[in-house]
Image: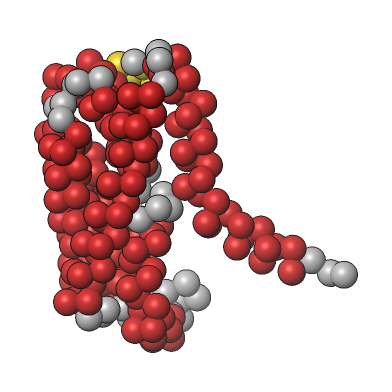
Amino acid sequence: MELFGLDLKGLLATAGLVLVFIIIFAESSLIFFLPGDSFLFVAGILAAQGVFHIIGLIVVAIIAAILGNNAGYYLGKRFGRRLFSNSQSKIFHPDHLVKTENFYRRFGPITIILARYTPVVRTFAPLIAGIGKMNYRTFVFFNAVGAILWVVSVSLLGYFLGSKIPNIDHYIIPIILIVVLFSVLPAIVPAFRHIQNKRPR
């Protein structure tokens, strides 16, 4: 099974769940350009093909996702607030920090959960939660809920399709593109509506 020239089946068969942990942890903490959704989905397909056990995949991926987001929260809380020390900055103005704190105070829990399903946002949501000083106990709880829902739904979808569709290797690229499309829709639709509303009528 190849994806963009990579032999994923051979790679995962060799590195196993260690690679799953590294990819999911890294994408959940700071490295936003890694394809977490696609990787987890393909891992589910490979679990259906016997590369590894689906329960082991789910457990390892959940732990990696939870720890990764916690690392992102820590980095945001420890270092991120320094970005907002310049009152002359337009992007990192101190007023934006106050707005961030207010936002996460009101919408933090649902944001942490829904962010799991959107690439890039999934990486930066815990970082911004740390910057905005979201209550840590609240973050830990909803971070775990979001990680469980995301890992279970995406990996089981891959596992189900992998066990039901013969020769699914031949369709992996179109399926991955569909998964990516549905992942970015929550971010694209509001942006499109915002652009439409800005146009003169």
